[in-house]
Length: 154
Length: 103
Image (cartoon, rainbow over all chains, first blue to last red; front, side, top):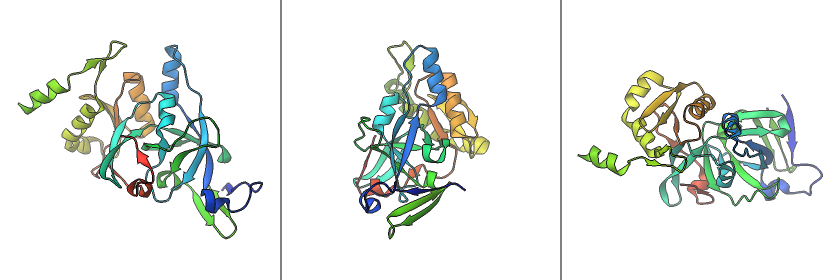
């Protein structure tokens, strides 16, 4: 089982307490949609890179709505949830996620909700995703706050 | 009478490309209306629905989405897992207002 230790040891201490458990992710346009657009002579947007925060409090992952706007992807469903303001609904999107650190080319996600995280797409280390238990169920996670590191095994 | 009002209100409109736009809600309504039959025939699978047209049922969400793209192009269609469980999310960050979902 490949195990990756975070954060990068070259960074300053207390990163885990300050920033949380962050992992680099790459999100791509679904291949079928890319092929369709290519065939129609439309622009095909390249993959988006950013950081995902591990969120054990979420049963479904969330990605910044700006990513889906960047890809011009339409929602495929709506789902209900309980929010601070009461009962609400959110749009569900298709998302093709890869984890470069693990050489995982594609992780399938049943439903990803679109949220506003303030992602701008200007830098590759911007926060763009909450990685919920729908993805974490595939991993071994060790959170070591004492040594300011966390481990992820796949 | 109610259904007549509904169909008038939800009359499809043409997009710039000349194709008819069908709201996602029409597919969601179709799913809920036929849920018992879908559960009987396709429980655990992902169905693809455009308006009131059921394209098919698939083992994975990826297969379902790809089938939808091949059949409908980049038009908006519904992809939903057929399950008796309520479609609901639990996200503590959303619950406590730390993040905001896109509606």
